[in-house]
Image 1 (tube, rainbow, N blue to C red):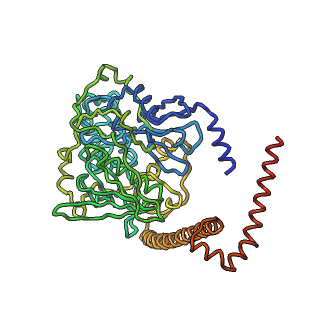
Image 2 (image 1 turned 90 degrees about the vertical axis):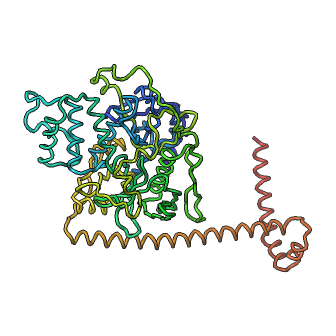
Length: 550
């Protein structure tokens, strides 16, 4: 505690901090910021560096020492938000995925979104069927190396590129076949646009997964997309709620609730449990921000709910007004056009922002440039056909959805074991250490322990989950009782002090006069109160004498 206090004092004496932002193309932008600089200042520096004008889709992320990810708040001081010591390391990432990314006007914006989706594909966040995966990888290959050339591209050339967490030789051959036969003549810009159009139709497009558990203790991933709220379990999307169906988001401790009204006035409430209260708050903030961005004309329309439970920390956050630009805002094309810059130079110059900070943009600093509207017309057919949260199941992939735990919002140590078990059972890839280094800015550490994937391990994992949920419920009840007891004792103590002060005062009230005439009060007054008053008076005179002598 002393070292933390001293480090904080030293930090306050510094006037400038070094800040490094890791961009989407894995390059870094380093700058020096003032001690009181706000998040908006850093974001504007990066956007100017990238010549980025369609800013509203992006944000800056950071990871705190507890491995909890956050979006940087643009209206608050950077130094006050960062829990670590300088120099600060952050990442630029897409925060709000465009509903129709191929229709973005600015080429640099499309390119940055392309890099983000390519990163999502590599880390398992954008999971899809094998046929779609082969097509996406072929588009990336065409954008990177151009047309197939037998002289430059020997047999197995596609295996040198890592498109997915894991893939088979059969998939590599399929990628090469598509690249050789179907994409000849496509320019890199056209390939990127086709890639965006294909990715936008997938069920996991725009998914930033939040690991949770349902009421039965089963693992699930919650996410907010341009089209609504989704829940992924196994290889299926088990819930999908459009933004116009979501009526309220609420959290209490580690419990997250989402309220929705569906067809024929059908009301549903979905409840999930996050690993930690901080993860639950982050999940809730992301939901409020996404709802404001994609649904509402004004962010003041977002309903905020204060927790009705006196003894649990609940929802008291409102997405700042002014962030959400009007949908009637015309499309604006700024010059000079990025296409005039050579492609090799463009890839070297333009950088992507950081992955980790919870960004709340102030209206005075937000740039309301939006190339597409966010109406329901952009909902892909596969999503619009299944909007009922209970009946809207859809198979998203041949494998279970299990992205690398190093890229999840809160890879907490106490939950790493059960996540490893579920990852092995589902045959999902191991953690991608490169992404952990990119987000946390520190060298990665190996994961401990190997777990079998047999049926017995699965049963033990399920039993452990249910036992853990029961223990958590008991702990929650005990904590609530203790908090109630402490508050009650505190109130009684305050009331007792107030009564003593009133009775020792000169107030002429019948009730107080009756108390003063009791033998018990006289005994307390002469044996305790008067000696204590004389002691305080003596100490005050002694301190006063010292001050006069000085």
